[in-house]
Amino acid sequence: MSILRKATLALAMVSIGALASADITMAQEPIKIGMTVSQTGRFALAAQSGERGLQIWLDDVNARGGIEVGGEKRPVELVALDDRSDKALVPRVYETLIKEEGVDILFGPFGSTLTGAAANTTEQFDKFLMIWSASADSIYAQGYRNVVSGTQLAASLLGLPTIKAMHANGVKSVAIAYLDEPFPAGIAKGQQAWAEANGIEVTMVESFSTGTKDYSILIQKALASGAQAFIPTSYEGDQMIIARQLRELDANFDAVGMFYGAQPQFLEIGEDAEFLFSQTLINPKVNWDVTAGLTRAEMMERYEALFPDAAYEPDFQTALAYGAGVVLEEVIKAADSTDPAEMKQAAIDLSGNLTVMTGPYAIEETGKQVSMEFVVMQNQGEGNLEVIFPPAVATADPVFPAPAYSDR
Image (cartoon, rainbow, N blue to C red; front, top):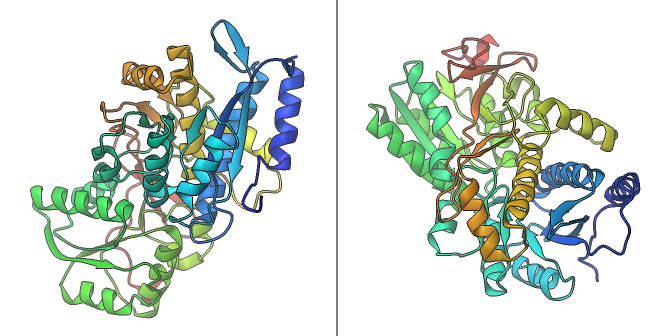
C-alpha cells in the first residue's frame, strides 16, 4: 500500500533493542498505536518533529518492559501512515489503521485541521484518540466520547502568553491577523478577547487564506491601523515568510508576536527572526518537576542518541508528542485497559494529578487541555534566546521596543 509507512527503520531498530533489553517475548500481544505523519506538504516539518517525540517515548516504555495491563506487561508497537498533509485523505487513512492494521489506540495527526478530520473516524469506530498538537476549541465542542488532549493547550488559551507579555511591557494597541483555519483562528479569537478585556485596543482583525504568499497588503493594513504591536498567527512556514516581508517592507512595530519564532527551523532565517515574541514548551531554561516520564534533560539526551543525524534540534512539537505519549501510558495504567470508555474516565481522574516534561496535565470532561501554558521567549540577537515571560521564570528583560530594521 503506497501510503503505508510503518514505523521507520530507526524506530524498528530502537524497538527491537528495547524489547531485547527488557527480555520481552513476542508471545505477548503488543498494544498497537496508530497515527498519521505528514511526509509531504505544509505540515511535514512539524509532524515529523512530533513523531520523533513519540518514538522517544516508545523506546523508553519498551525498554522498561512495556505497559502493564491486566497484570502483564505488553510491548507497544507504532503503526504510522502518511496523510500527505491532506485533510481529505485523513479519514480514509485512519480507517485503514483501524480496520486493516488493527490498532488498539489512535494518536492524532499534526494540527487541528487534520485532527478534526481524524476524530470523526475514531469516534465512528469507538476508538480512543490521544491528541498531541490539535488545539482548536471546536474539536472539543463536538461531544466526542473518546478524545483527550494529552499536552496541547486549547487554542483559546494558547496564544495568551504573548498578549500578556506585550501588555506587561506597556503595549496599548495591537493588530491581529490569522490564517482562516481552526488552530490559528482559535488563537486569534482568544488573544482578541483577552486584549479587549485588559485595556489593549485591537485596531485590526484580519483573516487570510491558505496558500497566501504575499502578505504585503496585510502588513500595510496593520501599519495603517496605528497598532503598536502586530500578531500574525499561522503555521511555521507562513510566519517565516511574514517575518521576511516585514523586513523587506521596513514595517516597524514595537513588538511582533510569532508563535513559532523560537523554533530551531525558524531561527535559521537569521536576522528576520530577531526580537520576536514567541512561545515554547522546551528550552534548557525551562524545567518542570515531572511525576511521570523523562525530564527535559533526559529527553534531550534520548533525542541525541536516537536521532544523531536529525536536521534539527527537538522543538516544542517533539516535546508535545513525547509528553502526550507519557500521558497515554499513565491513562492505560490507570484504566488497566485499552477500552476507550475506561481510558477516558482514567484520563479525567488523572487531571490535576500528573506533571510531565511539558508541564502539569489538566483537562475538562470534553478532553480539552486547560494547562501546560507556554513561556514567551525572544531571540535577542544571533540566536540568543531568553525567557521574557512570565516573570517567575524570566531569564532576561525583553528588548522593547524592538529596534527599527534600519538599526539592526
